[in-house]
Structures are given as structure tokens and as C-alpha cells.
Image (cartoon, rainbow, N blue to C red; front, side, top):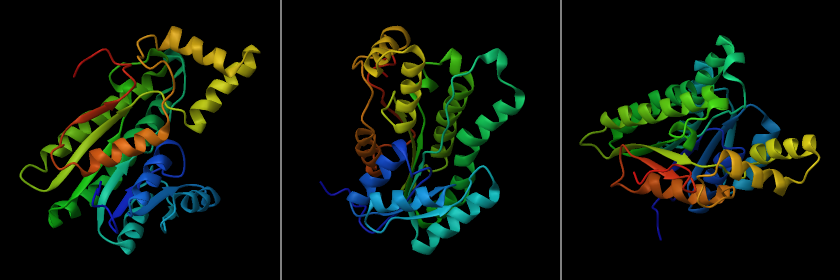
Length: 260
């Protein structure tokens, strides 16, 4: 199937690892010119080589206006931005009563404002050209709120509201804005988190995962972590389907008990 992304510029923020890397590889595999950002040049260079098809990266911290402006100008040097995937995000398991005000602000900066800052110029230019697609990578935690990750859940819910509000700005145009809701995924950071638990408890990784799905994710229908590559394919389809606008597409393994 031709997704019609060949030679078109796709920004994938935080595209040097995890779900972002999988998305970047999928776009590049279909011929897109992929642009990623990060804060570690060596890691960016390695990721670009893995992504292939001439992918390029820039050291740019989107928690600052300067970083967002640098990424946007860098992407424009490659060509008009046709796709933007707002993938930057962080997660930690923390007691609500121990989370400081500063920590809440850190989460809002990382999970919400990074997307706001890069979307401002990108969406404005897309509307002028009457062409383009933006996807915010949210989480099933946005719907199935997680008490020991309250800051994470709150910011991921905010992304859903933001993406729908921005979609309203595209009415009658050929520009679209959507959100994507992945479930627990086998990224390096997630696996490292569970491997740390396994080491602390003196048990195997598989034992920890069985306990996680039994106690923390009993509603998951697949009862296993999702391969990041599956998200790459799903986001590509969401980003290129002209009939999908203002939606929040779930790929959560059935963790959220809802038809819609």
C-alpha cells in the first residue's frame, strides 16, 4: 500500500528511542524525509543511522522556546513539514503526596508544552499550505488514570484535549490533528523499569511482568507488552488517513474497558 509519504518531511520529536524511534523508522521505510530531535548528539546520530533513508537529527530541547524554534528551522531546511508527531514524554512512578509543585511543572513542560511549542509554527504553516497532519502521542493512562503516576496521567489527558482543540482549527481544510493512545509498550525504558524491579525482588523479568498484568493491568486483553513497531505502523496509518481528524485512536491492548 502506498501511503504517499515519499520525499515528504516528517518531524518525530523524541525520535531517537522507544515509540518515537519506531514511528520514525516506519515513516522512513515508506520514503519520508525524517527529522528527529533529542539532547544527546551521539544518540541522535546512532538513531538516524538506524532509521535510514537519510534521516537527520538536531540537538534541541523543546522544553525551551529556543529549542522548538531551532527544530522548526532545521526541519524547514529539509523541506515543508507535512507530518509532525509529538512524541516527547516522560514517566515516573511516584507517590502523589510526595510530588512537589516543581515536579508537576516539569511534567507539564515535558509532556504538554513541548508539543505546544513545536505545533505553533508547524500548524500555522500547514494551514497556509492547506496540507499536513499532526499526531500527539498520548497514553492509555490518559483515560485509565493511574494513581501512582498522577502527573503523567494528567498531562496525557491534556494532550487529548489539546489535539481535539487544534483539530477544530482545521475545519474545511486539508490539515488534520489527531491523538494516538498506546498501551504498555516494550520500549527500552519500560523494560529497564521492570528489570530494575526484578533485580530488587530477586525474581525473573517474566515473573514481574505476570505480576504487573495480574495486579496493575488485569483489564489488559493481550496481557503482554506491545511491540513498538506496531505503534509505528498504526501512527503512519493515522497520520495519512484523510478521513481521520479530531480523533483519539487507541492501540492499548484492550486495557481501557470501553468500546469507544
